[in-house]
Image (tube, rainbow, N blue to C red; front, side, top):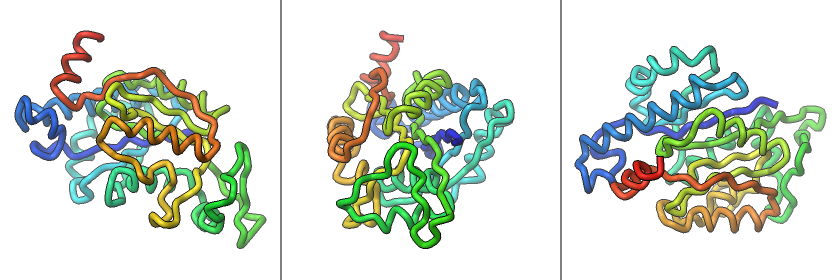
Amino acid sequence: MENVLIIFLKYPEPGKVKTRLAKDIGNEKACAIYKLLAEGVIKNVAQKNLKTYDVHIFFTPADRETEIRTWLKPILDDNQGIKTQFRTQEGRNLGEKMSNAFRQILQEKCYKECITQRTATESPLKKGEEGGCKKNPQEKKFLHNTIIIGTDCPEIDATLIENAFDVLKEKDIVIGPCKDGGYYLLGMSRPVPVSFEQGSISDLFVDIDWSTDRVFEQTMEKIHKNNLSCSILKTSVDIDTQEDMNYYRITS
């Protein structure tokens, strides 16, 4: 089983990134801080990676791929041969985008067909279950342990990621809560049942009040509802506001 790290990334355009921080320090400075944070996280997880996981960068907007590749090329050229792929984020909101990203990585061959054939009342796939395709039972899918992060948490590094992948050897879910009530990391070792009413979006991402202090709490409720085993990492801070920056300076 391969380990895959998903990094969610935006093109650093003033006025489009770190908008809450920009209210205090202006669009240009907020964008510069976003770039520094993103570059720092990517350096930490790519250049110091012990080749225990591949890196997939899911970016937005789709028409900025060339600029994003150019921006990150100096960092990724020095990543010691770690496999890195670029993909576009797909979905109408953050939950759909994350669900679609997980689905792309977790599935192999017939996964999409197999998971949509399961009803909402069926139990999720058990740990280690390979779940052959119902259309062709001899064809089995291959699952990846998959973790998703953003670029707002400066404490994310390769050691933290490797520890999280170690957790997924025993647990279904690993999650890193943020001080503001969100989370900076979410990992899965197997698919989570989908919500058919929401267009086959993973249940972990449905009916979540994104960008509020209830995200972690609501996600944990979903984890418990689906009878998923879970390990919670240390609480950290995302840099979204001037207050976050001040807190990080004091505690770091």
